[in-house]
Image 1 (spheres, rainbow, N blue to C red):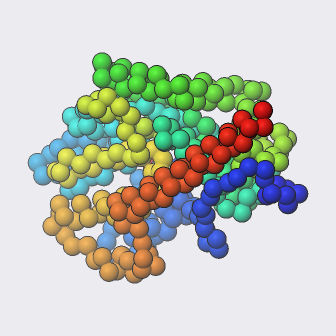
Image 2 (cartoon, rainbow, N blue to C red):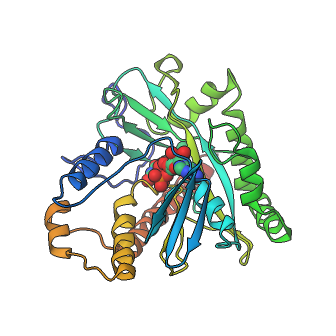
Image 3 (cartoon, helix red, strand yellow):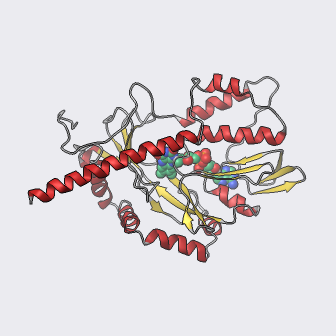
Length: 342
Ligand SMILES: Cc1cc2nc3c(=O)[nH]c(=O)nc-3n(C[C@H](O)[C@H](O)[C@H](O)COP(=O)(O)OP(=O)(O)OC[C@H]3O[C@@H](n4cnc5c(N)ncnc54)[C@H](O)[C@@H]3O)c2cc1C
């Protein structure tokens, strides 16, 4: 419905959740996980902020992490360093068949709450990282946050200096990467999407163009009702597979099977982070010869029933395909009716 309570003119296909939160405050979640870990009797938990890992080396059965002049040793290492995970993997000779295409993204924020829950547009299967969505932002008084936009940037972290060189090193540009990029660019959907998103970064034009897209979610949205969301940005490390000469959809993880993991997490990396953590913890305990108390895990962190990948992912895909088919049918009906009118 629009803000006057009138039904929208077009048909809408949707699924949603009523009466439950669909947004997570990941900062709070991380603090809670750390606090609970630190409270375990007989365990020591150390957190080092602002400590850049320059290099990881295999040292017998362990790993040596170089952080400035310091060295740390670990029996198992999980590298969750965003786009830099692949950079560190390459340094060690892993994942050399993969390259990284950093997709930067920005958001826009409204001055008031406009949506009660998350509203996601259906993704174009050719542009998996691209569907615009609107959320009540839990960190901004539930004002609505629209986005993200998408812009290919030759750097691994958006507002950190010195990551341009890391980008070129991680891309490992060669014939296969050129073919993968060419395959992307020859799709007209993708070409026009890239061009449009480039314009989203041009002052003055950006808000006006974005308004058109955001109105698909809130039809009555006005130019003065939203602004560029400062600080709500980042880079999604989309992974390019050189062997297959194509962009890999979703997340990628490198597990050489010898006590180290590297996770690259473009969207939906946040949504699936706990699922990935569960997968990784099982790999870690397996490698270290420890045991994982699955019952305690379910008892503490879930409400009993929870999503175990990958089967629900398949059923989710099937459901999304049904929705897409319904959209295609609606579109056909609309075009048919439209052509009869003329
Ligand atoms: C614009 C945008 C929109 C997104 N939309 C969605 C969405 O709708 N749904 C969804 O599920 N996900 C989404 N994502 C993805 C989601 O944000 C990520 O998957 C998630 O933040 C990844 O978390 P992470 O902790 O693995 O990595 P990051 O949040 O990238 O954190 C990695 C950290 O490692 C640090 N680091 C890098 N190199 C080193 C080093 N050598 N030593 C030490 N530290 C290092 C970095 O500085 C950074 O702080 C989006 C991402 C972006 C950018």
